[in-house]
Structure formats: structure tokens, C-alpha cells
Image (tube, rainbow, N blue to C red; front, top):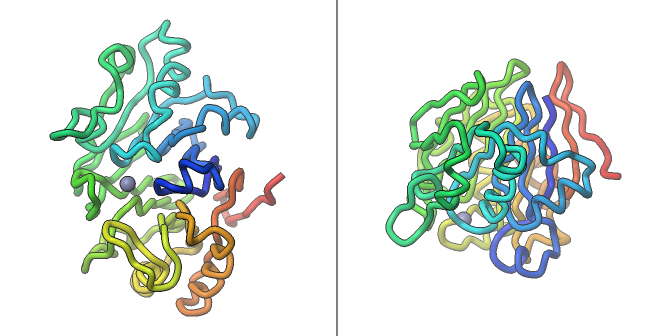
Length: 261
Ligand SMILES: [Zn+2]
């Protein structure tokens, strides 16, 4: 399978300034999944030379715009311009149904053309076109936010979405071969609801993936992400890299990081 980063940015100010792209992550296995399509996802797909029409599922971890903004336009692509009912939309309860004053992220019109709508509940498992996906707990300002593990034949690819550190959170990610971690701040410059690099170091002491990828950088991580990744690797012994816009990762027998064009 292949992982393609359409953006490595996150948080309000990186998103508003587009200092880094925010189009989310593509997971290309038997199905093509678009994970967390933030603002610009449709543009970033075109820039990466990937047809949006070849989308089989849209997955949204939670209802913040840097994670869902382009979800409707992706649904339009997935349904071949709303002409057929097809594909899967999977998301946090807030994203699928709406919770209090947030979500849902699809209009009723868009949801009407999606073949399968799946709510991702922490601890729950769903199948997306035969791919087993586990939703994991998070502690975020959208209280229904989830982390995710995708059980590919090549190994488990996991995604720690926006969350602050909480004891025991490592449990669900054990066994991941590739671990993508949203880390908005460097060093120990912690803010509520998010991880900083020190938290990632703690997590990686418990979860020992073959490759960790730092992602979703706020303004204070810009220019520092690669240094932070090297520091994480040095302190944990886990191979760690910083995501870059349009980076591609081949997960086969080996894990190969393709240079960005
Ligand atoms: Zn968020």
C-alpha cells in the first residue's frame, strides 16, 4: 500500500496562511481512502496528479475544518459528480451525525449519495471495503474525535489524530508498523488538546513502530519539524521522519520514503 501526504500542516494559523498544505492523507491499498481532507484537498490532489474521482472512501477523524473542509467536494468526486450512489463516508459521531454545536460535516444532499455512512466510536471496529479499521480514543476539543488503525496486509498503519496526551493512550497503537502522529508544537511547548514533541517521545517509548511520521504542524513547528523528528529518533530509537507536502511512503516488504518532486 501507499501513503501520500497531501499536506503536513494543521491547526488554525498554518491552515489560514497555507504555510503548509492541509489536504490530508491518501491511503492507497485495494481501496483509495482520503483521510482528513482539510482545506485545499481537491487542489492538492490535482497538484499531486491523483484523480479525485478515484476515491472510494472519505474518513474524517473529527469536525474541525482542517480535517473536514473538503469532505463534500470529495464526496462529489467519489459519487462521480453525484450521479451514482457509491462509496463510504466514515467519521467521528460529530462528523457523521453532529454533536451539540459541531457537525455534521456533510449536507443531507451530499450524504444522500454516499452508499455507506459509518460512525467511528472509540474502541469500535468497522470495515471499509473489507479493510478492518479500528477507532481509538482521543482527548480533544471535539470530544468525539478518534484515532485510527488500518489493518493492511502489509501491516497496520495507525494515525494519532488531534489529541492531548493521556495515560494509556499508547495501548491502542501497539503493533502499528507505521505510526502517523499529529504533533502541532515542538519540544515541551504543550497546548491543550494537542500533542507536542515531548509527548510523542513518551508515546514511542511504548509503541515501537517500524516508522513514525510527525505530521499536522502548527506555526511553531514550521522549519523545526525535521530537527524535531531527528531528536525523537535519537531519544527513542524509533526511525522517525517529518511529513512533507506530497511525500509518498511505499509500505511493502520494506518501507520506502519517496523524495518529494
Ligand atoms: Zn482538531
